[in-house]
Amino acid sequence: MSGFADLEVQVKNFHEYGYLVLPGFLPAGLVGRLAPEVDEWVSTGLRQLSIDACLCPQEYDPPARVELQMDAHGELAAYAPLLELLSDASLLGSSFVFHHLHSDRRPPGGGGKSWHHDYEQHPQRDREYPMIHALHYIHGLQPAMGALAVLPGSHQHVAEKDAWNHLGTTELPGEVLIDELPQGSTVVLHSALFHTRRAAPAPLRGGGPRYMIDASYCRTGTLWPPVKPYWRMVLAVGRERRLGKGHWPELFADRHFDEYGRTSTGMPS
Ligand SMILES: O=C(O)CCC(=O)C(=O)O
Ligand SMILES: [Fe+2]
Image 1: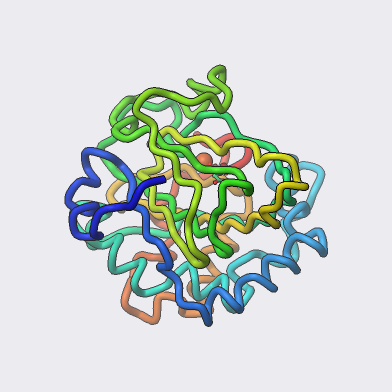
Image 2: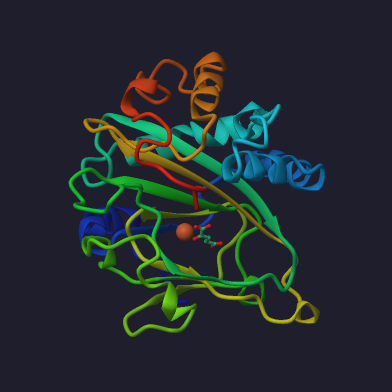
C-alpha cells in the first residue's frame, strides 16, 4: 500500500473514486474501550445471536442486546469527527440517518470475502442517494491479517451487490490494496463501491485477530430498506442514549426507512 493523499484532496475526489483512507482516525482512548467490547460481543455469542435473528427471524427472537447498547460502540456510531466528515456535501451532506453497525473479530488466518458492494436498494436501479460504510479497523491492518482491496470508481456502476461474486477475491486491474494501517484506522466507502477482503495467510505467519467494526449511514430524502428485522429497536437505543447529542436530529429517525421485508432480504453485509 502506498501513502494516501491529504484528507481534503481525498474528500474532493470522493465522488470520482468512492473511498477515503483515514489512518489513525480514532483516538487511542476510544480504541482501548472498543476492543474489550468487541471481545465480549464475539466471545459470549451475542454476535452469533444477532446474526441468527437476522437470518431466521421466524425461529429466533430479536437479541436481548444490540451493539449500540455497549458504551464505546454507541460512542463510535456517533463519533463527532466522523459525522462532521460525513456531513460534507461531497459525502452525505447535512442530513443523514444511521443504517446499521456490525462488530467483528476474525481469528488469524481467517477467510476472504468475494468482490461485492453493500449499497441497499432492491432492485438496484440508481445511485441518486449516497449510502456510506465506515470500516473501523480497531487494531489496524497488517498484510498478514488479510487486506481490503477496493476498485476506485466502481460505485458509479449500477449492479446487484453480488454481481461480481464469481470473481472471488482475485486481483483486479486498477484496484487499490489497503493492507497496512495503524490502530484505530477508518476506511470510508461509498457503499456501492466494489471491494473484497483477501484471505489472511496462514496463522503461523502472524497477524493476530482482525478487529473490524463497520457502521453505515444514508442521506435522507428517500426510504431506505432496513436490513435487520429488529431495526426499530436499534434506532430507539440511539435515541434513548442521545448518541447524536442533539446535533444530528435525523440520525436515529425511523421515518427514513421502509418496512422490513417489503424490499429487504437477508443479512446486512
Ligand atoms: O473485512 C473487511 O475488511 C471488509 C468486510 C466487508 O466488506 C463486509 O463485511 O461487507
Ligand atoms: Fe463489504
